[in-house]
Image (cartoon, rainbow, N blue to C red; front, top):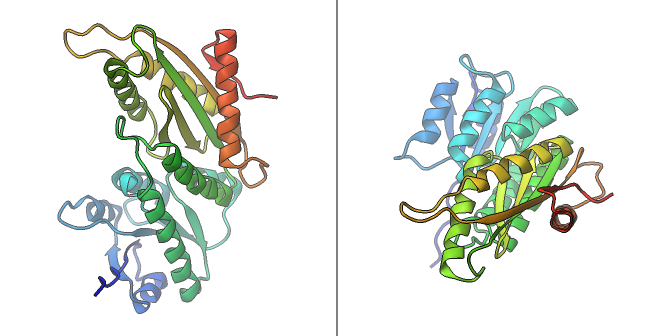
Length: 298
């Protein structure tokens, strides 16, 4: 006999008894209610309690916190779980509002009035996408996504950027260890340290993956070309700061990066695979010219 499917848990943060909460409860969802931002943060920070599968925020905010501020705090707490965060809005948001929401970690706006059946179907689709991404393959040496895992995550982030009419960037960074063979244990250890430094220097909303023996790719939602160039410089600086264990000399590395970006994912002709390919070509241009950062192809 198979296991019964687990009932999805939805956290609704609203100062009122929101109709969305009632509609979802009627359709079999397990509801967690938070009347304040502090209560919502506590609900996702309680180690004794399973994380919610979805978070829905009242766009009117809660008494102690604006909706986007709360979204940022919740995204920090549930980033590893890839929990979808929605905001309920009385009218379609503007492009700047879309972009600000994406940077805060919001996956989509829910515009009132809301149909309960349509909302339940939307949440089900999001949870399926979340579960597919959460099960994505991971590179065992670094703990980052591998090529297939990053591709899955990139598709999800591209959908979010499309929904928000927001920018999307890709940065590829290649640290080459000059005093060790790329395949030996010392080089592998250095790559693990570089991966840790890159991850620490990025944002919660960024997706990091290892796409080659000494190549890392970062998908950065909400970043245009200027933001991608700034991110590339920050990542290079983080990689340069990698040191050895006590008593070990710091590794000697050559560092290059390339980037590409679209200013509005809804109207861009590029998919996530194209964006990555163009960033890789920019990296190769940087290597060929001896530059630290390669600009996207014309």
